[in-house]
Length: 339
Ligand SMILES: Nc1nc2c(ncn2[C@@H]2O[C@H](COP(=O)(O)OP(=O)(O)OP(=O)(O)O)[C@@H](O)[C@H]2O)c(=O)[nH]1
Image 1: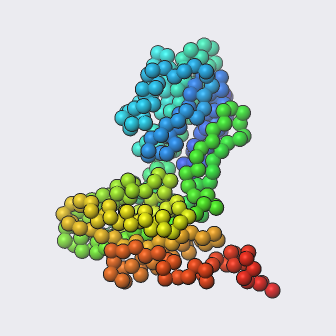
Image 2: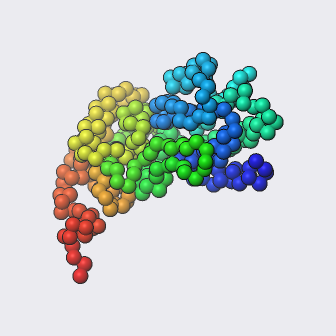
Image 3: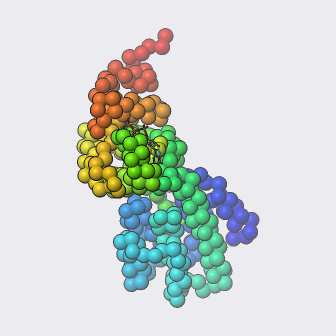
């Protein structure tokens, strides 16, 4: 690899603005370099749940005991993966996104016979460093500082499907690496829910903003443990959270939110004895814009606030979805004739 192609590879990584796009670009530039080596590539399929799977390899050799132990430790979340281990027999490259290890590449030393092969390692190392730095930048760019949840831009972008498209790479000849779909596909069904803390101004007034902040962090933690990693969690405004729940069924979404409501009600918070929230949600229908979905969830939330708080309101409970079909859908089924 000459300097020109290294420069091209680095610039293709640094211009990525979505995690999925970045991972795709990184696999694309690193895979051809790995082709001449004996390696195994493990990918953490569910991000925060640490499910490492071998997804690409260029060797029939079985992983040694040390490698197996390392994968076990990563899966259990016990491994301090920050370091680059340069073992006698293997090189380990950890790709981390600030919080989690998303990928581990293990290269067997036996394959590094020629100078050419040995000189590939620093290049791989450099590209992985750029990859990790960019992941970290994206992490801060997309997250709310206090809670670590996604910010509203990511949330809206996810509804609009721009950064959550399927990733698969067919354009190089190396091992094909297909990443999971992490977000909502165009035809997937999901619900948009807004979760707003009740009487939070009073909490701040009585106990101060520091306690208020701790409660927000605690709530974010409850959301993270309550939802699946495929659902998208966001701090939407100061004391309001938004969630994309991946489910086509309203009754399932209702059950999920009821379970969350109970968890929030029974959790322990600093100073505050009991905390309640009001939730409003709507099922996403084909053709509705992100802003329309959020407006529907907000209307439902406002209804819940006006009717006494501490409750869950579905948009469908006060709006007939049949008479409120999106324009495109009505056109498709011939309800509207243009001329
Ligand atoms: N501690 C803390 N408070 C915040 C933050 N962002 C917003 N808030 C507070 O959230 C409160 C929101 O107040 P309101 O909009 O009146 O809502 P509320 O008191 O919860 O009333 P209802 O929503 O009607 O139940 C205000 O006191 C804000 O200062 C934050 O980052 N930290």
